[in-house]
Image 1: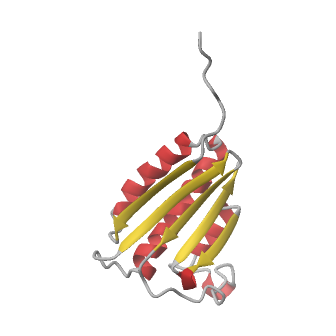
Image 2: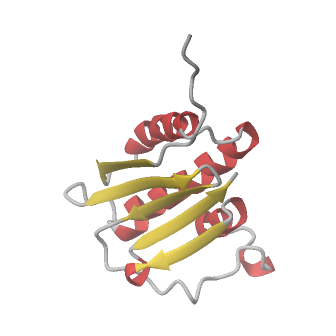
Image 3: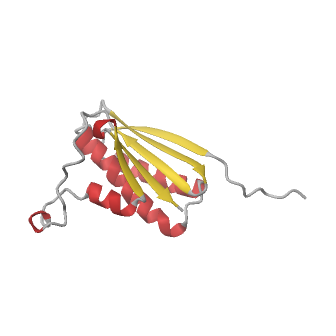
Length: 142
Protein backbone atom coordinates (compact mmCIF):
# COMPACT_ATOMS: atom_id res chain seq x y z
CA UNK A 1 0.00 0.00 0.00
CA UNK A 2 1.44 3.37 -0.98
CA UNK A 3 1.42 6.33 1.33
CA UNK A 4 0.17 9.74 0.30
CA UNK A 5 2.90 12.33 0.54
CA UNK A 6 2.11 15.43 2.57
CA UNK A 7 5.28 17.28 1.62
CA UNK A 8 4.86 20.74 0.16
CA UNK A 9 5.19 21.29 -3.58
CA UNK A 10 6.14 24.76 -4.85
CA UNK A 11 3.16 26.56 -6.37
CA UNK A 12 2.89 29.17 -9.11
CA UNK A 13 -0.15 30.40 -10.99
CA UNK A 14 -0.97 33.51 -13.00
CA UNK A 15 -4.25 35.03 -14.12
CA UNK A 16 -4.73 37.89 -16.55
CA UNK A 17 -8.08 39.67 -16.66
CA UNK A 18 -9.51 42.67 -18.53
CA UNK A 19 -10.14 45.80 -16.49
CA UNK A 20 -13.81 45.07 -15.94
CA UNK A 21 -15.11 45.24 -12.35
CA UNK A 22 -17.30 42.18 -13.04
CA UNK A 23 -14.08 40.15 -13.20
CA UNK A 24 -13.97 40.38 -9.39
CA UNK A 25 -16.41 37.44 -9.24
CA UNK A 26 -14.03 35.34 -11.33
CA UNK A 27 -11.03 36.37 -9.21
CA UNK A 28 -12.88 35.42 -6.03
CA UNK A 29 -13.33 31.89 -7.43
CA UNK A 30 -9.63 31.78 -8.30
CA UNK A 31 -8.73 32.88 -4.77
CA UNK A 32 -10.85 30.12 -3.24
CA UNK A 33 -9.14 27.57 -5.48
CA UNK A 34 -5.64 28.87 -4.67
CA UNK A 35 -6.38 28.86 -0.93
CA UNK A 36 -7.41 25.20 -1.17
CA UNK A 37 -4.50 24.16 -3.37
CA UNK A 38 -1.86 25.61 -1.06
CA UNK A 39 -3.77 24.58 2.06
CA UNK A 40 -4.07 28.09 3.48
CA UNK A 41 -5.30 27.89 7.06
CA UNK A 42 -9.09 28.27 7.25
CA UNK A 43 -8.98 31.40 9.44
CA UNK A 44 -6.60 33.11 6.95
CA UNK A 45 -8.80 32.59 3.89
CA UNK A 46 -11.21 35.54 4.41
CA UNK A 47 -8.28 37.91 5.09
CA UNK A 48 -6.51 36.66 1.97
CA UNK A 49 -9.61 37.06 -0.21
CA UNK A 50 -10.51 40.57 0.95
CA UNK A 51 -6.92 41.87 0.66
CA UNK A 52 -6.41 40.50 -2.86
CA UNK A 53 -9.83 41.66 -4.06
CA UNK A 54 -8.98 45.16 -2.80
CA UNK A 55 -5.72 45.06 -4.76
CA UNK A 56 -7.46 43.87 -7.95
CA UNK A 57 -10.24 46.46 -7.54
CA UNK A 58 -7.65 49.23 -7.15
CA UNK A 59 -5.81 47.99 -10.26
CA UNK A 60 -9.02 48.03 -12.32
CA UNK A 61 -10.38 51.35 -11.01
CA UNK A 62 -7.34 53.49 -10.30
CA UNK A 63 -4.52 51.86 -12.25
CA UNK A 64 -6.22 50.97 -15.53
CA UNK A 65 -9.15 53.36 -15.08
CA UNK A 66 -11.67 50.72 -16.23
CA UNK A 67 -10.02 50.54 -19.67
CA UNK A 68 -11.05 47.07 -20.95
CA UNK A 69 -8.07 46.99 -23.33
CA UNK A 70 -5.71 47.04 -20.33
CA UNK A 71 -5.06 43.90 -18.31
CA UNK A 72 -4.62 43.19 -14.63
CA UNK A 73 -2.22 40.36 -13.85
CA UNK A 74 -2.49 38.38 -10.64
CA UNK A 75 0.44 36.09 -9.79
CA UNK A 76 0.45 33.58 -6.96
CA UNK A 77 3.62 31.93 -5.69
CA UNK A 78 4.43 29.75 -2.71
CA UNK A 79 7.91 28.31 -2.37
CA UNK A 80 7.28 26.93 1.10
CA UNK A 81 4.21 26.04 3.13
CA UNK A 82 4.86 29.02 5.41
CA UNK A 83 4.16 31.83 2.94
CA UNK A 84 2.02 32.75 -0.06
CA UNK A 85 2.99 35.74 -2.21
CA UNK A 86 0.45 37.48 -4.44
CA UNK A 87 1.37 40.18 -6.94
CA UNK A 88 -1.30 42.32 -8.61
CA UNK A 89 -0.04 44.41 -11.51
CA UNK A 90 -1.86 46.88 -13.74
CA UNK A 91 -0.92 48.73 -16.92
CA UNK A 92 -1.55 52.22 -15.53
CA UNK A 93 0.84 55.05 -14.76
CA UNK A 94 1.46 54.07 -11.14
CA UNK A 95 1.03 56.33 -8.14
CA UNK A 96 2.95 57.78 -5.20
CA UNK A 97 2.17 55.28 -2.47
CA UNK A 98 4.16 57.32 0.08
CA UNK A 99 1.54 60.07 0.31
CA UNK A 100 -1.74 58.29 1.01
CA UNK A 101 -4.39 59.90 3.21
CA UNK A 102 -5.09 58.14 6.51
CA UNK A 103 -8.66 56.77 6.31
CA UNK A 104 -8.89 56.75 10.13
CA UNK A 105 -8.47 60.54 10.40
CA UNK A 106 -11.70 62.34 11.22
CA UNK A 107 -11.74 64.27 7.94
CA UNK A 108 -11.66 60.99 5.99
CA UNK A 109 -14.06 58.87 8.02
CA UNK A 110 -17.11 59.62 5.87
CA UNK A 111 -15.31 59.47 2.52
CA UNK A 112 -16.68 56.84 0.18
CA UNK A 113 -13.28 55.47 -0.88
CA UNK A 114 -9.71 55.46 0.30
CA UNK A 115 -9.66 52.30 2.42
CA UNK A 116 -8.34 49.67 0.00
CA UNK A 117 -4.65 50.02 0.80
CA UNK A 118 -5.46 50.46 4.50
CA UNK A 119 -7.32 47.12 4.37
CA UNK A 120 -4.51 45.41 2.47
CA UNK A 121 -1.96 46.60 5.03
CA UNK A 122 -4.10 45.34 7.90
CA UNK A 123 -5.08 41.98 6.38
CA UNK A 124 -1.84 40.84 4.72
CA UNK A 125 1.35 40.16 6.64
CA UNK A 126 3.25 42.60 4.44
CA UNK A 127 2.51 44.92 1.52
CA UNK A 128 5.08 46.25 -0.93
CA UNK A 129 4.61 48.53 -3.93
CA UNK A 130 6.76 47.91 -6.99
CA UNK A 131 7.10 49.34 -10.49
CA UNK A 132 6.27 52.88 -9.35
CA UNK A 133 3.02 51.74 -7.75
CA UNK A 134 1.84 49.65 -10.72
CA UNK A 135 2.36 46.41 -8.81
CA UNK A 136 1.48 45.49 -5.25
CA UNK A 137 3.03 42.45 -3.56
CA UNK A 138 1.06 40.92 -0.67
CA UNK A 139 2.53 38.30 1.63
CA UNK A 140 0.43 35.91 3.68
CA UNK A 141 2.11 33.71 6.26
CA UNK A 142 0.54 30.55 7.62
